[in-house]
Image (cartoon, rainbow, N blue to C red; front, side):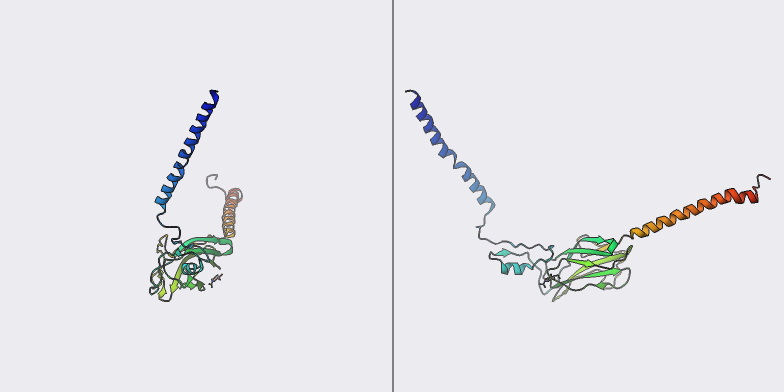
Length: 229
Ligand SMILES: *[C@@H]1O[C@H](CO)[C@@H](O)[C@H](O)[C@H]1NC(C)=O
């Protein structure tokens, strides 16, 4: 008879505690979420736009296509020439004399890009025009052991981005900042050339040793040594 009131009391205590304990956690979370996201969920988010991504559709077009409003990074005025793009990694395949160049778009409206390649002190070679989505291009015909300067140029209706050396100043010995539009490229010499050099130096040394031996054993006998007389 004592067992059942005790059991009832335990049950009552358990059920009365559980509903009180449960709401605490969700309430706590709700408060934190409200603090972190002050905007309602329908507010615009940044567009899926990466200024370094190859074949990146301009942000304006992303805004038009999406069902949800999104925000684009600010751009400079279309009435001004674009800021210089930022040259990124340059992947060189020295054996084939080519290099793949990557860059990132400036915060400016851009209609096209092109590459400029200086070899020594000659006038730069201008690459083909590349549309506004392009962030990667290939250079071909690089010479093994050659020294080049590569720049990427952005252009719109108001003009083109600035490039060092465009006004005739010499690029030789010029230093290019890391986040600028230009880079110095040194193509490594062909591995075959190194082998040739090694073989050349090796045969030179062998010839020298041979002539030393020949002089020691033959010529010295014939001519005699002054000390032996
Ligand atoms: C831009 O050029 C790339 C590479 O040549 C090409 O794949 C793409 O279709 C072009 N886009 C437009 C909009 O012309």
